[in-house]
Length: 548
Ligand code: GLC
Image (cartoon, rainbow, N blue to C red):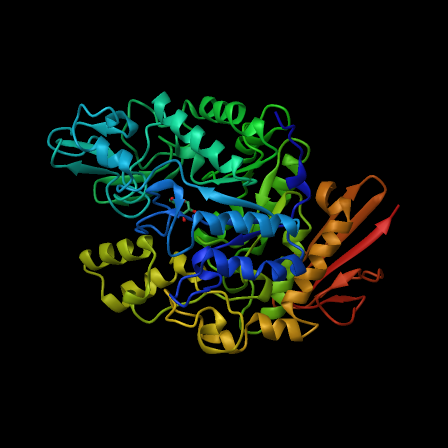
């Protein structure tokens, strides 16, 4: 048995949305050989843990989050040999690799589901969740995440199957021990090949209440209503057997390897995070902190709320658990657009988020392109969108009689495709991402926002990320320190991290207006070329470091 270490606490992680990273063969889709060819850049940036969005075989009806074979690689992305190569090349550069592991559900084309739906007596019938209808309708009133019913009727066997996401993503029945055995066996297979861990997709949804009660508008986690159907998370989030399932996974699989598990858990609060990641008793190494992104995605930009959420988590979780922190990912808009100011202060606000991300307790996850200040994309036509959530939502609006232009504007504002456009490598055709036709449109600002340009400019967002990553690596207080918010004018966010004899102070102005503030200390790092000791300018970020 390998003893587990906490290497992931020191790590600076980088999320690779593989399809949109770099295309090596001109088919318009990013791939594993493309990623391998860019490892030197990632090493140069200073990151040492990569999270890859799903690479396993999938019909791609939900962006790869619908897996049809856990032990094969999607051919457009590469082969198992390419994956082996990626591990070898990454490890040679001291970079670890984790991938998404989507085990709340499979694709409806997974052989297990094909067998399961073939007859009520098939041995794999209970790998999924089948129920009879009620009074000629669905078994209950649940809506799925993607604006459709959470139950789909199967004509052949005359029962409904459950899918919390799209109908092409049937939920696995974790209450069946045979399902858990199969999944555990497969995870070991990946770990034996050298993978360093998993990002466990939608993992706090795997245990469902077995009485399947109706959702209600009064639920704590009620999110929306679609006709008589309700979308809320109460009846499957953190379900009754969740802890047992995860502890079993940890003791039977994870504890045998020096690996990391990062849980994606919707609507997580500090107590939940402690439950999952407490040092001795937790079943996962960390869960992602989502409260801030959930907030700005639903409510919009609110600097006071952002400060409150971060302060509460940093203070309440310290010493009790661990989170992964991100401001962007493949489900979110680009933070520089939705929270920063991508028109007048793109570089400054991108750099401010670099300072914030890399000076908090928790493993920071940079999302590809964030380090060059990439902005959210919008497309002119609904046909240009790929995200199933966007497409279903648009169809729903049209069937509700909303004018197509208005419906397009509304879904544009929330589409997950905003952050999924290809990485902008240079100012050449298709931003240097592919020699072919990109699978989804490139952001039109690529002549101005691209890596090559950033590498040539020492004042660029990318150089700033590199410096900030290096500073974090050299500063234990930024990794392990306690957190104290300091008094400051309301517009600013000033906090301190302290570890042993080292204190780091961070001064941020997350807004467009300069604020008077007296501070004589010369910053270690700042996103303005000079320091005004009486003023913090728009989107200014300073890091001050002192030994006691
Ligand atoms: C997670 C993924 C998201 C996906 C969903 C269903 O939330 O981040 O992209 O749609 O799980 O698998």
